[in-house]
Length: 374
Length: 227
Image (cartoon, rainbow over all chains, first blue to last red; front, side, top):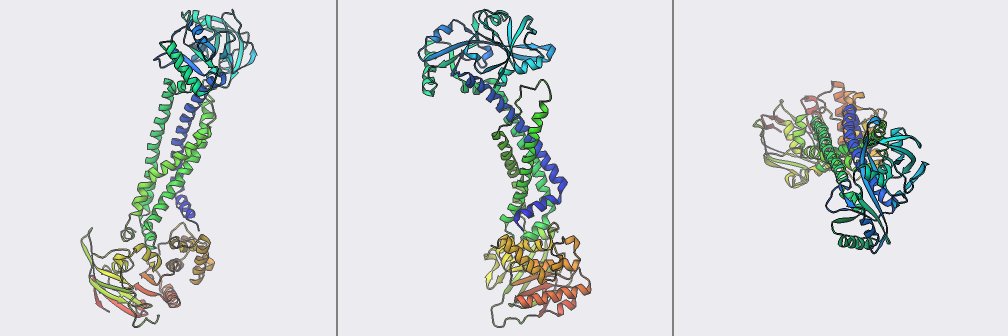
């Protein structure tokens, strides 16, 4: 008989309790994995926008926390284009619009110039991109088109303005897929922001990190009042991304607390109920360390079982969320391996947090006293 | 029983043992001194609550005396690793058998062996042999609940021998058995002690069991009345 056999037999002795505890742990772990997974996918999706389009720097008004609240003169475009080390510049105006009839409270609307580098990474599924001089035409991301039920040629009301859908595109980024793109001038007029943009994206002549850092310093020195930020830094500093991360980690802390209390309760009950039995093991010569290993081993197996169930539940949970049409396309249903690994780490952590005190208590039982308890 | 070793240092020596339980302020032992020779069998008799079990627990390193000292081969127990002493030198047999309910007979015998250096195959082989020795080959894979009380005590005896101890301590090993089974268990203990050269200290209420021992120690009110 191996030591693990003894551990498993003890857990199987109280199947219902073992299953209930593992299920409790699984629910806690699954909620953490789903939230961390969604936050991580959001971040990855955001980063894909920059990477997919070959954007090295994002230029916005200095001091703003969200690109939507940035406001810069479109004429800065020429100055930036003339800066040493800059290969390409594209202006962008971003805002949000709602489509109440489709139950979409907020969708991203991008105003771009035709032929802009921002069109990179978009694959046309239907129709075409707009051309210079066109007005009130819209290209819809695949997910938005799906949710709006629109196809090329359909009319679309955007913030009270009539638009015609001329193209539907696909993107590796969920942000782009859930957005719409209209001509920059049209959006500026609609929003009463003629001559203004929220920012510029820049592709440097070299993507080398030192060259980008130099370019960044040069832009900020030559153009007071703007901040030039590399894509990764921008995503990490974005207030919504930070909020998503904080929520995910706060849930993790809460789940750890609740999960470890559940584990503690189960293991302390097991130790109380088996005081006499632990006395017998000690009478038979078992060292304190061996008893500690037994109880911690039981907690560890419970934690790993909870982690395995939690990982399955997390995957199924995300798929269930995607059954809601409003979530479809905004949530990436794939949990990255690193996030799934977090489930395993949580399982082990919960085992140690919840199992250590009962294990120490069991190991410190005096054999004579424990036998009298029997 | 065995032929006691004459002229050698005693296996066990207890000097002026006193035990006061702090919870009930009960004085279980009052200055008990005794010696047990190698391969000797000693029966301790006396009314309930006279301190027999307390004495056995102290001799087996399960409990510590409030005063006095136990010497094992002239080494004071207070100075040796009592876990190791219990694991390597002592085998315990209890009145209520105390088998682990989730393990089969042969697996129960392996439990003390986790403190030995044997691998799991060696543990299984030794446990199997011990189960054969106590005559339970046909019941080796049965859970304790599927065994008769006599069979459970046989498993407990096999388990006590798991780590090849030199001292067997039995706390009323026949207390829960009918007279026929009692005779069988005592015959088994006697046979195993003789064949393995064990020293046996047992507590009993049975005059018949006590009479079969080399020595009988009578106790009352925490004291030895006669040896």
